Length: 117
Image 1: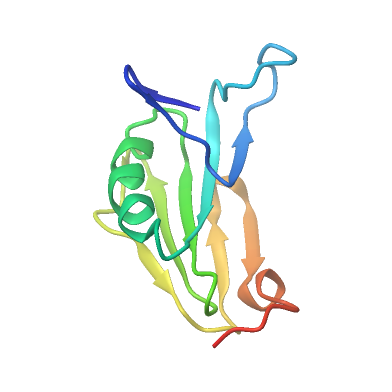
Image 2: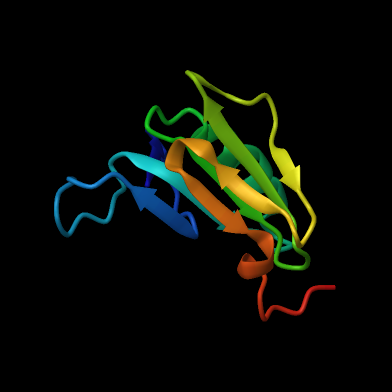
């Protein structure tokens, strides 16, 4: 995904609008981007990538998931702007809701079968 003139990013999950060129390896109008944290990517995923991704005009939500525990950081576009900071969801029974996409992701399902500690 092209995040700027000198930046090329590869999010863990990309949901792009339909209708782009077939066989393209670049997201043209991503609406949802998600990353799974690793110890080496915490600062980049929650810092640099968030700042770059939230500038994308088509983006409706950016979510970052911990790999160690049921925890997610979610930025969601409200009207024309993103929230000032991420909404933190850290309960296994919680549901990550992205209203603009009519999407509900139960944390228990996201982390099903994963040993957290």
